[in-house]
Amino acid sequence: MPLWFIGGPGAFHQHHDCQDPPLQHFDDIVRNAPIFHARWGFWPMEGWLRAFEAMGLIRIGDGTLIVQRQQSTIGQTDVNAHR
Image 1 (cartoon, rainbow, N blue to C red):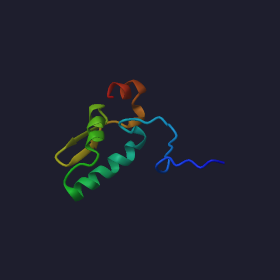
Image 2 (image 1 turned 180 degrees about the horizontal axis):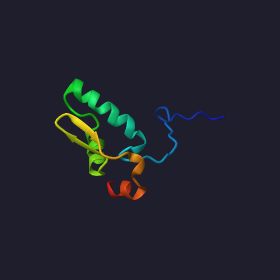
Image 3 (image 1 turned 90 degrees about the vertical axis):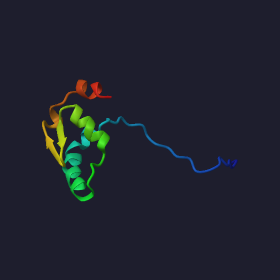
Image 4 (image 1 turned 60 degrees about the vertical axis):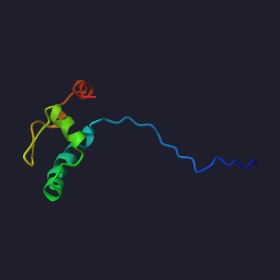
């Protein structure tokens, strides 16, 4: 059996679909974001939060995050419109 040196270890990753923003983590993100903001003074994952806001799911202002509608009410058309 020949031994081949490829310059380092190989890395393999199985393809899987992903969402951007990650709606499957919506509840966790909106629960933890205000806690992070209260401690550190800025919003984490701001790109995702702004995307949720653009989708009408949340509203952000003056250190508050208000859920406007649950992500379970959003359709695939809405997700694709914000990519």
